[in-house]
Image (cartoon, rainbow, N blue to C red; front, side, top):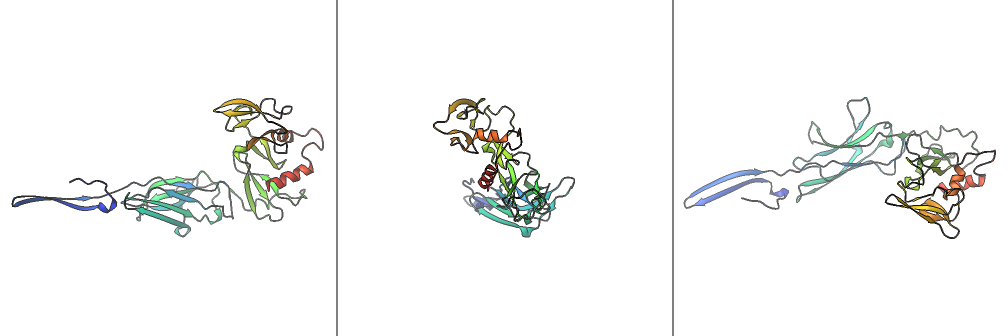
Length: 309
């Protein structure tokens, strides 16, 4: 006997009987269908604040929880120097499962209520697929990198003594190894911590002194060598040839120049009308002051603050 296009509903006992004349012979067999579990994918917001919910709760998805047996979701927290992971309560886990009788698979999604990320600093959050029995054996697992959670009192602990402005104060992100994120602290609501980012594609790091994304990021080579951005300056773009730039195509730089009154921008598009966000102006603003009064004016500081808020 041969079965084709087998579905989950085809599982069970099968009997084959052969009859010849007055004699018959038969044989029975049990057909069991199984499907393995697929490693889940875990998604979590990149910047977390203790005592605040993020824009999206941690979410775990898998193409298959397995079939015969079908496994279940489980969330744990792992910490260095602690052998046993901390089991998170089921009441904080919401599971959605869809079973297909044609593929013998159950896809699923599990969303975790992070309890405002209390106590998760320097830990790893893990989503597991475990056996649906008392043993709870881990079959598949996905974990975050070590979570760096900004303290909820971060803005309240800042020194506002010499800050007479009522505008928000932008502060360097305390943990991230790259230079793009920053913390937005509102002096009128110091219990609120808001995190933003300059964006890696921009190519400029956050500059706390200038309160703007104006510091060229460090790279493994000169900034006029093609890297991960599409447009780069030429060696002499700054300070005398602000219209000139290069376009990177498969690692090769092709010289070009902006037309009309536009200059090299490097932000979103290669050319723009001169402003505080164009390349030469940002380079000028980032240079160390040589005398009192050198650097951004109060008007510029106010513009940058309003631009990023």
